[in-house]
Image (cartoon, rainbow, N blue to C red; front, side):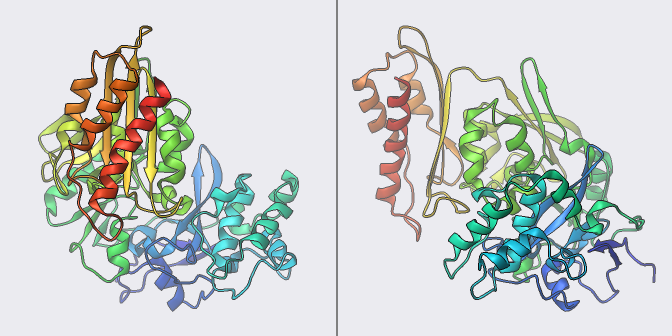
Length: 457
């Protein structure tokens, strides 16, 4: 039997065995191969105990990305490089972040420790050691103070120290990772090839970062007989700025989006730090968030408020669908079977914009209600244009179009704000669930808009 494409773990070449299930997570494959340092906690990408580092080459440089191995199916591992906690020490010499965790007593029960070490390892070599480096890792013993002390201990190490601490597996790749993919995980390298695969195997499912589908796969649920993976198509990962706006490839990760456009689009700067943990944002893609069409996807209200348009490619060519016309019903969209989301275009916005998120915990949690607002007011205080979009309050991410229409052309004063607050609460009929009651969500709908309008009045 022909071997599938190899992959690297700590610099060592590995292969999927004929009996291996390509839908199995990298985490569980590691456990079966006796890489016991990588732990399974939640299996949902929430706790970070399973964190590993992927080694990627960007702009000619070797770089590290933390990710949740519980969400990554083995079919997408092929041809990739990874470092686990076993690969950090050089002989008997611990990596600086490991040594710091020892010296500051950063480990209590120890179960979460390898995941924290891997997140610190990536942050250390990125030069970005802060709370966001570990906000995807949970310590159930509440040992965050000594872990923060460990972070502070190595935060200011010289670049020469950081470089010398890089494991050999990160410094250079010594193996050829070419070869055929698994028959159930097709790996096209162009949009045309992906569309052709989808026509040949219509029952296969599109798969990008797998942060959504990976949860189902981690639970042993079979989503499709196979997958057309979109994470190897260079044209999907391009982000460009033009005089009249922005074009964002559907394969752009949320971390890449945050680094590239947060300064230009304050709404994204408000939203992305709280969207999810670094491990999730390193894999989650713009197109995946749109494709899932979740009514609680935090990126989607932003696209509505920014008048985004989605570029769809399919067997019949290319078409552009405005965001406000794309979402039809719960998890139903205007995308045709066989089409893939190739890019998002956003015109350069005018006026003020903000994003608000209310959740049970500050980071790495699903929104109870999210609000994405943009307004353009002239020098006399009259509203020229606006967009008011919400997530978590309907079957789809939705704009408050009636309130928008009422506000347009009015002078922004206290009476206008009060009336707009009242009207917007009447425009939605949210449900009660285990996260919040209908009454609480309704109050949030009004309060978030009131806060925004008061701030810009």
